[in-house]
Image (cartoon, rainbow, N blue to C red; front, side, top):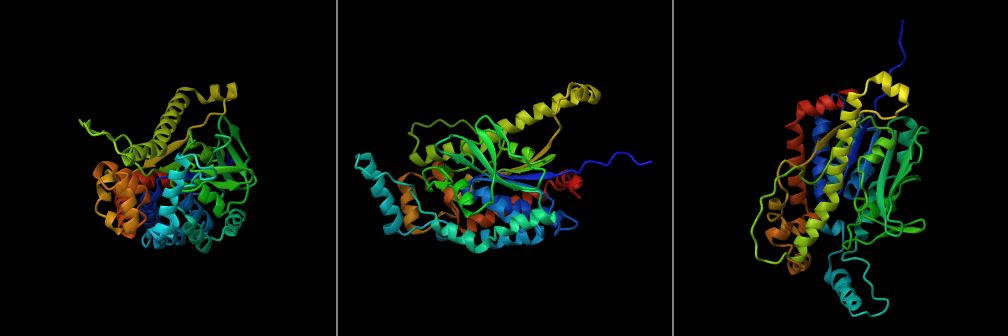
Length: 383
């Protein structure tokens, strides 16, 4: 006698932000590919990305019919990255012009408001050449992918908007300051989601300008749950639960130090809060008998979460690779204090150079293999 059919389990992958730090995510994916008995089969039917993680998420969605090929595509790009592929670094056309705009704006000269510090048009060109966005719907129709979302922050509405494509069972959602909006994903969504505040320009989608997806994302895990994930693997680009030593300093913090601290807060604090919230819900569910849950009509369900994050601080690694940046970018970073150890946080977000990216890929790869048993147990239900 056969029982009721078992509900299909869907594993979600969440890739967070961090500029060039997103290379760490590629190392994690490389290790997962190595651990899988069938590396061609996509273990993540639901993929969600924000900020730089949106680019990696979109790549996985485009190549969802072959996980091995998707990871290889990411490796080929990230292992050979140069800053000029992401943003223009010539002094006349970008940096000097941006500096002049900032100065003019401070002097209240009309129509002089700067759009951003750097022009990331080269990144848009790179994405258009490498990603066929039409394949996302093809993979959804073929069953290789269930849903994908890219989260952006609306500057006018102050809402965190997750643009998504998904199967027929996926419905739009609306919560306080966060909504899900269905539409075909394009380069514009990736550029908006990865637009670091002040550094890269906002992007207009429909009627509103959007920026970095991590700015207003108070619940980073939420999109994956709305899309139907039962378990979620989160790959963060910043260390969690790291005890930072208290340091006595009489020196006033540099602009780079303040900016780096702000960016770290954007990319990590909300994730920690969301994970703690989910853990509390899981504990609450474990205390309620299943029959009582059914009688009360509660729709709560347990969601397992595994978080992968760097096992060592990234900031000390930055100094070894700063010389790979174009000289004029180094000049600009030195001016705001980003070339010193205390300001290296800011530099790490812009260090799209092969040496730094390869070092982060290697770290992500080693971190994941060191947790081999934990990762395999987590992904066991995905096969």
